[in-house]
Image 1 (cartoon, protein in one colour):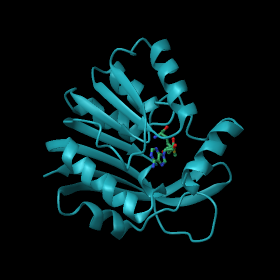
Image 2: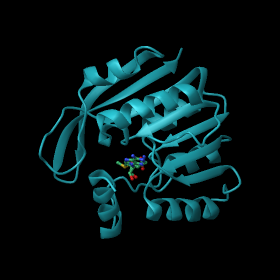
Image 3: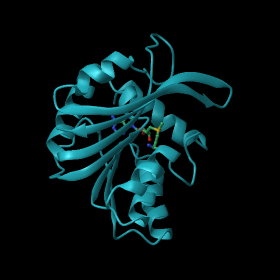
Length: 196
Ligand SMILES: C[S@@+](CC[C@H](N)C(=O)[O-])C[C@H]1O[C@@H](n2cnc3c(N)ncnc32)[C@H](O)[C@@H]1O
């Protein structure tokens, strides 16, 4: 198993994770308020807060995360929320999505892509391109900047986000800011892409 998998597995096993909130981020809520419900993909879904929220608002959702503990809890939470019939959680890598037939009108990634290696990002991008319908929305939240030799997510340069998606996606909007988690702050970005 790769080092990122190990790190996330240990973080989940250690107890509460900072992204374990009942609601998805406001950017997800605002976006889905203006989109007609359809099929959605939640990449790196964690405990499923975005998937469950979308399912509660009429979407049919697939959530993917490679940590078994997160997927087990996400299924339980969907059951408790009464949306288990509208959301399917898969324990899998977001860089290996060949098992999903698609096609989706929406994909959301809150904090996963930046943790991938370069080759995994390319595989993720290629699968996402295959899985999204033309005109579909892809909302990405990523940690920006690269940090070498430190523990924690790798992060990615803002230009790398643009380069990765430029061929098959239009960038409608981006917002760069600071994210505060516990006692740390880091640069981050929200990106609203549309599949060409
Ligand atoms: C910062 S957490 C955010 C979780 C969730 N998106 C949320 O907002 O609550 C990032 C998630 O990405 C998952 N992840 C990271 N790399 C992954 C990979 N290669 N395949 C699948 N999941 C991955 C982690 O297990 C973790 O649950």
